[in-house]
Structures are given as C-alpha cells and as structure tokens.
Amino acid sequence: MIRDANMDSNTQNKNNEFNFEEKLQDLEQLVTRMEDGNLGLEDSLKAFEDGVKLVKECQQALEAAEQKVKVLTSADGDTEDLKLDPPAD
Image (tube, rainbow, N blue to C red; front, side, top):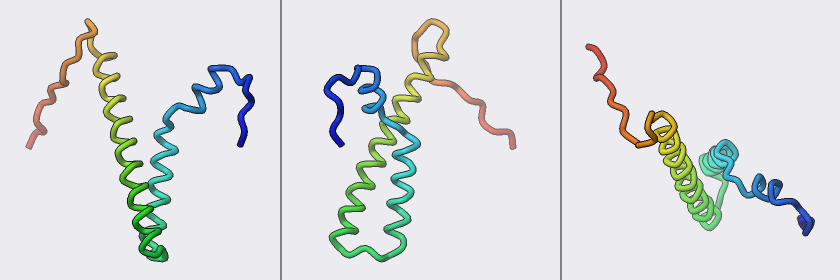
C-alpha cells in the first residue's frame, strides 16, 4: 500500500505505534499454525523465528508499561517497587 506523502504526523504516529493486543493475537495465530503440524521444515523455522521476535516485542512492551505504572503510582515521581505481603496460609 502506498501512503499519501501529505499524511499528517498524528496519523503516521498512530500507524507506527506498537499494538500489544494485535501482536499477541499474531503470536497466538502463529502458535496455532505451528501446532497444526502442517508446516514444512523451512516454514516451521520461519514461524519459530517470527514467534521469538513477537515474544521479545511483547515482553519489551510489558516492561515499558510496568515502568510507566511505577512512575505514575509514585507520589513524588520516584520509582519504587511495590512491596506485597506474603499470602496468608
């Protein structure tokens, strides 16, 4: 698809944003295809490579979200780990 050269920067930014849910869905579809067992060796290796890339991208997005939550929940802007009480027996 050819994009319009006059596209405004907001539209471009939205198109370039990482969509976690979309990537996770792509990963689920990839796993389903691999589990079906109908892929040849080359296709399986390519699917595995793509899956590893998707997992890394999703992990990075989760880490970034976690960091943002830490910053937003800290009263003075400093990040600190949340200390949880151990579960009661």
